[in-house]
Image (cartoon, rainbow, N blue to C red; front, side, top):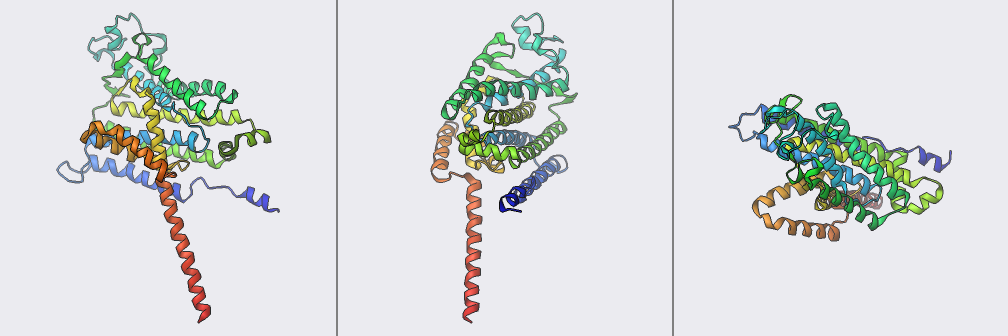
Length: 386
């Protein structure tokens, strides 16, 4: 057997040591947080409030979104400035389901129309709202809406071989166009106020502590599954070809691969993961409005990935958690300083941490291994001299 054939037989494991550690930490968080909230008395210093649980759930939804961004940026080389659109579409699909569950408990008591439609003198429910009274249909739309948008956009963009900064600008233009569209009242999505005042999900009150814990647990599970899906893609042959496209697209095309098909598949998977993140975000935060389409949000997502470490998956999760925690703290302490801090953070990461936090960790490990090898070599020299 030749060396080349032997190398082809070497397949990365789905659960390498890094993945095992990540999933173990995630499982520990998924178990510990509900225990500290439900079983530890409020008088104890170890008790976690429901507000904290909801905040952690929101951070984990953002972490799933960061995974989606890292999949296309870190492993496919597409700098997408439009993933906020996929996130928002998934959120709106969930929000439409939650609005239909309100029924006659709204301000105007109309069992068929959401309050904002009654206020705007709508006479009947728009056709695209039908079916959202069923949970399974709404969950299907959480995947279909961003997936179809990504497919249509990617089909034309990738077949036209739009790459680099031009593709980034087009993705940003796409999300900004959706922002303007969803702001319009006649679109039937609540205009600038969006969708809010949700009551329950699957018959359970959204204000109940147990429901909040269930949503948190669902987010933990979705993050774990999202990580495994991304990991399965990148260790497969498709993933290796995608990384080759990232590094040398023309060479891959010359070899005979249909580059546009590879890009389209990975882009659609990433969009659907972003949609799931949006669907988990909405019931925990309690609102979805057109501001989620803002291009600034999509830029923030890139900063999460850059801070944590591009093309690492777990680094994207770390970056999302740290940056959003910093945002929560800083917007409370110094509200006007957040955008300046965000810009400074991006500059620092670009200049001094090009591989992010994950890169620093790997650099530290390499230094320890090198030191161990040097010490081992020095010991052998001393033994020979003796």
